[in-house]
Length: 179
Ligand code: SF4
Image (cartoon, rainbow, N blue to C red; front, side, top):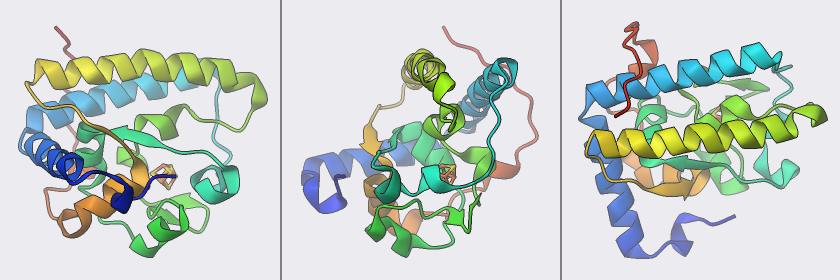
């Protein structure tokens, strides 16, 4: 799993700039939340249910990595992680016990991953579908796109985590508009 020290400095600068620009666009944040609602509805329609065991958030145990876009990091990072030291152990810093402390703003990858083996194909296809929309969403809002491994990205954001408006409590039902 790549860490901050593995990423070229230019990449780090680009990530911070990209996240910073996303944070300044509430309309983009609302559109991203609308996209997440579509993803959640797709999961519900599929009968996919999270059993809340939490092992999927322990990347070192599962042996998988979670990647996120700049916009997703901007939204997720509006909530301060309860334990940043977990990043050093290749675990998500938003997990407390088995639970996610950022459930309302968790990234796309978290929303489509389920333990059921028969959902693997659906998960992959759904991720690809909505990831394409994520890229278009950045483009529509004239925002730079970056795509990074979660713990490396959160480590880079560091002090700015939780310092932007907390978008997790937004009640807007703005529709998802992609051109
Ligand atoms: S953001 Fe939440 S659901 Fe996603 S890996 Fe972290 S704790 Fe798990």
